[in-house]
Image 1 (tube, one colour):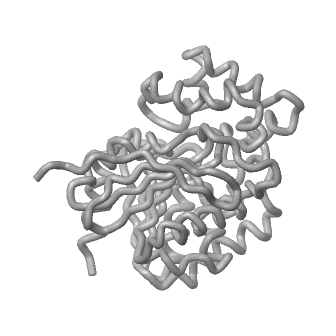
Image 2 (cartoon, rainbow, N blue to C red):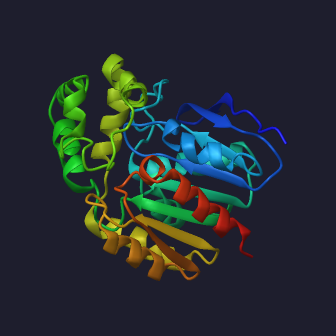
Image 3 (cartoon, rainbow, N blue to C red):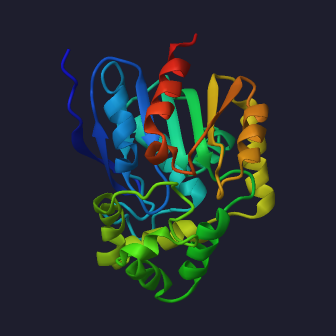
Length: 285
């Protein structure tokens, strides 16, 4: 059976145009979400593994790796992006979706905001959780840059230099193995070339609510009564493994797997293992 090819598409949403890829097919629908300063190519290996027998939809969220700037008045806070994901599912009329996320912690906001009715299953891989916003040393460095005039431009200009990408304060703690430079070039190019894209990212980075609200979002996962899988990197140094265990305990039907030999971006470090866990999770009733 031939594998369906992913098709590049665009969707006009309230905040602006969102690009996405869709493998098509009649199998279970997975919507896979990436984190800050990257795009849907984060999931390229996982999609290649799952696309035969599953419909994989991969939007590029307005988190810095997007190529089309959002409207100037768009709400790109954590909650604003979570609402945009809900709008994306509605616009495509997707139901009983398996929502999968990496690095970005918007699932908590989505559930707390009562916009999870189209989600049949939830998969949370190593990501922002509880009050770990912005997460770890890379997140704090990004937040400091966003607060300074011209800071994001300067910070990402440094990432044109390939050795800078493996520093602990940039991407060195995100993956155990270097992400191919051509992939990272694609992630960073919009931030190198567009002040509007940098504006969008700044909105997100500075749009983190107070600690009490963040903790309330996490606690709201107690209300998610559908199957949930928490897949966490056992050696994560940005998103504490303890957070994965706590999230799995909060979710009424949550289960936990810890994936060895990986940092935060499991789709880069261990795509085959992650795809295997996803396949097994989807087979369960």
